[in-house]
Length: 461
Image (cartoon, rainbow, N blue to C red; front, top):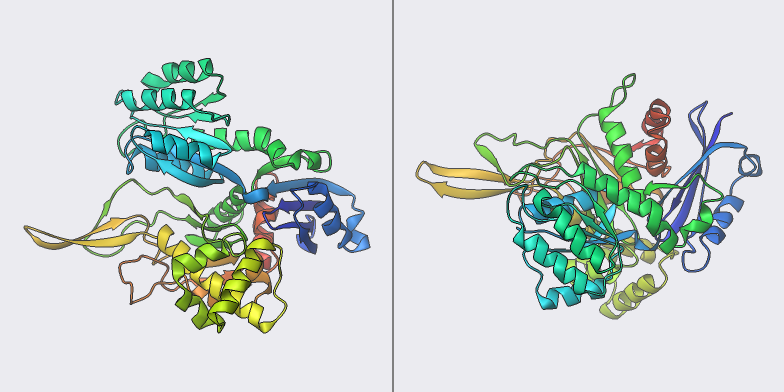
């Protein structure tokens, strides 16, 4: 056997998979509460102790890991125009696996600078202006940051004509800077991959220590990537395949966690309806959105606030006082697992509301306008209606008996015809929680990783 141990230090649980690469089989899965507040190795050792004796002793040819511990990499982005460079910066951050805490546009006001300092992000992305365009705003924002108490690394990815001066301003103030190419060198032209590489590098080199993950590096081969990046890499592999194994084509992955609900889509999502014109920034082939207010544990109260008490109580059959008490408990005890039918009903209600809202935010939409020639339609974002596969991953899709029903909450509805959500995809769940592991294996063992993913996804329709 050629054994691989794949580890995910999640915000709620530390999960491990033991995989035989020769037979392309998952030998064992185990999980334990993540212990980032004390010693991350405690939770890992507890999970390993749950493995069968025949597996835990190895030997392992590789031990790879991802992490979203302590809520992942918190990031703030600053750009010039909300729909242009600020949006480009946001997309770069999300694609790198960051959790975007806030997006600022134009010159930072005094109140905004104070808010930025209170957010205390792990990393800041400063963009603004196309190459050869506006330099005044990014320079003024650099001066504001220089006067601030910010101590996190600042990635500079704006107008190249201003980069050297921006860097000088920040360095003189004792800030740590990382310079890269402009995220938007021309209007409506995105160049986000160089910035994403820098953000991933910062995560690996700096944030690991801040999150207490340094202690795990002697056991594993280093933290390879943020967990969302691992899932996104698995989505790419499943969609596009390899030189020797065909992929599935256009797909969407829904990832429900304790802190966030993430949506990954692979496919261009161009207009497929007659008379629809695409508008706004071009959509990336590989897209990820993170909803930091839609986690099932840390942000259970946020789901209540967003979706409304009536929606949750209708599905969970709880009184107002019971609901308030239970949500408070979930936010305090984030590793809680359902113990009763009532608990399962509440998780179903929270997950249903979270995935519906997350998909609405991720999918494109149609806007109806009237002109001299009559009615016409504009499409903003991706059209997911024709995507053929929809995959759910996360603990709730493993353990909940209504996993498929949760996934169905993301689908297109005639009640909201202008929201371009998937219309009739094949439904799958990551029943073995292997997608993060597939992403970790994708670069070293792409063909084995792809076949493992296809083998262990559970089909529902």
